[in-house]
Image (cartoon, rainbow over the protein chains, first blue to last red):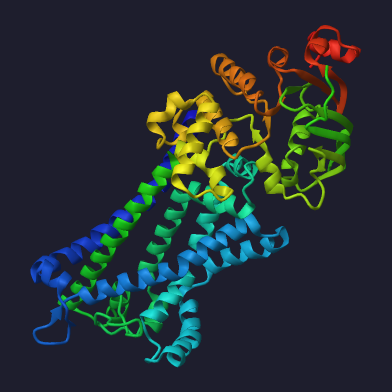
Length: 285
Length: 254
């Protein structure tokens, strides 16, 4: 009797675990089955390195190179903005923050992660776009706007993981450093931070993964021109926004080209996650 | 025994962790270039006391101190004392070897760099001298770029001793430096400590009575936050004045 109950429960646990794996598999099958045939039909290199995206022309052209570059630009921009601020915030929270302030700061950072991205986008649309237009020129819908916004959006990821990486460093390293006459600051920056390096790099990579996949916030403020941006103030279209802008009305070949864009995006995410796992394993070792 | 002015002079030292009083008015003179051992059962205050000598207790927020500790006649708890300079003068080796996750070279060079030495050849010289003093140079000289965590525990502890020596301290505090090590590594460290006392004043906490009697010149016996007895090691171990000391060293408690 007890054995039957146990094996039934075991089965339920197993099915639950299978559910997410099956979901992942179905997603992979769906986008590859719909996207990959198009890529080969149209020409892989023509698709990846094509400079022109003009689905309504006859004949239509589907070059996504501007979007690949666009995604890389805004992601790099997000890292430039978000990583230093995020890592330094983590240092502050782990080593300098008075307990009373920590009680406010920690939930605030967690809350940042819970804000829907469309809200971030709307905020940036009303605040950053005019600010950048008035300060730097252009129309305000630009690589720079998207970078700053994404930089803010990756903060909770970078802060949270970097902070736990710092807290995981054995305290004996710190006391060893202080006992040699090093200051609190020097002990943190020369001993604790290097010791937490793998964890911090993981946090950065996960943040980058978040930035490259972000869609709804970016679509509001990036300008969305399918061109290779020539300056920080130039408009930009990313892989994700390319899909969301056109999916609603796309049919046939155009629709397949958008799914193929998702295949490319998926490739990027796979690369990023592999790098993440590499550093994660190094950290565990 | 010739009486000269002590290297460290402790007067009526009281220490609290929050409401708990851990040290009850200690008085102790620590002689220069000798080895002073602190013995006593767990929780008697000997580790707390040794950490007061380089103000490592400052890191514990609830810790409060009264009384004075003078190093060469200067009160180390005075407002004028630069804590980082004090810790340069009074080095420390911990119970668990705690090398940084850096190369052996960078471990030793960390202290000198902290105190402003940037010149490469000067650093090279300090690293070599410190490792030789810690009797580990021959074992590591060919792989100074190896991670210090990749060598054995006994070697790590000697790296930590070398790291402490590299900043040029006058006093070396050792908080149960061999309790995490095997007998062979322990013997090596004891031998090393005996050698080091020619140049440094050494204070050592130990749980190991044989160790205290083997290596130290003076011994202080701690019990419940008091120093019960202090004096020449041979006398403490052969002819103690207090019955508690005798009970402890003969293994009747602790």
